[in-house]
Image (cartoon, helix red, strand yellow):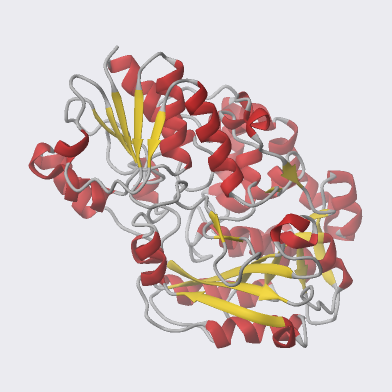
Length: 469
């Protein structure tokens, strides 16, 4: 069998490697950094004993991934941990609205808006397996449930702000949905801005919003453990500067890289039209992230926040809408929407006894140099007075600092590229995974179905490579 090469050991690169290895190909994975995983790494970023997730921390799409759930990852150490509630969203009245595991509990919690929430989420939640297969499937495949996907598309192609106002009467339900929709990195007046919120909301009622015990590195380690059992190998500290360094004879090369990096290493090997498409690829807003070592749990005013690993800080729909509009239009907001993860409330392995870790970020213009620390902490103090007294150490990450740790995070963009209409249908180009250059494929989150720790980009790219091989 020809030897296959995968460049990049993020979840998509490792997923691609597993698919190739299961087909019997010898596989080598090359990773530039000393620790594999890309965005799915866990490291002591502040003080010894405090285990922080460098990238994503909470994984609804990982737990709900059609490919990951088909693998024996539990045999290689992956264990999911859930909060009592998947999500809490505090408000200025001292309470918080929560996202619950059960649709019935969610309907009761939202009162008059409960039936509307059920109508919005139930079709996806009830048919989650088929929906996930279609939504995370290759863009050219005929959907298993065309009517379900058409109904989803009808809602997803609207703008999140108007959709929330038409669907819900009360501010609590509107705020909850706004926080979900903000994961899209889109302004709420743009089409597709509700799409990610619909998927994440439904996922909470089916697979939850769990964290891996010990941190996101557990996902990476489980994938590597299974890959090695299949005969594959991962080589860390091997930054590929040119395709010639890792081009196996007659074998496929799959790149868990963004278009900009592919251009750098492949150069003139790419066809002229494809090079232009890669050069025209647009990156989305970045993030400004902070990791905290804490002496105590975050002192939330709303008790409901202690039930959830994930907390959304931003107040009302109107506030979150303004925050996302500003970030997507190249400016800085004084009151950013902040995503918080507090895994050590439910996973004691993440910090020394009695201590805690916290992970949080806000959206910012791509590659901005503005320090958002004070603005983020102001939002924390708003909903958790006394938070600063719990801080033992913090480590702030600008977009440039994030990119220096993971070259795929161009300008701090963690989604692999802008989720515009054009890049939704042509991501990153009409060919999707195949570059037009023999045996060369792109398998990163810059390809369908896009960002998230689900491995489906790598899975589909590897299957295409096998078919063409």
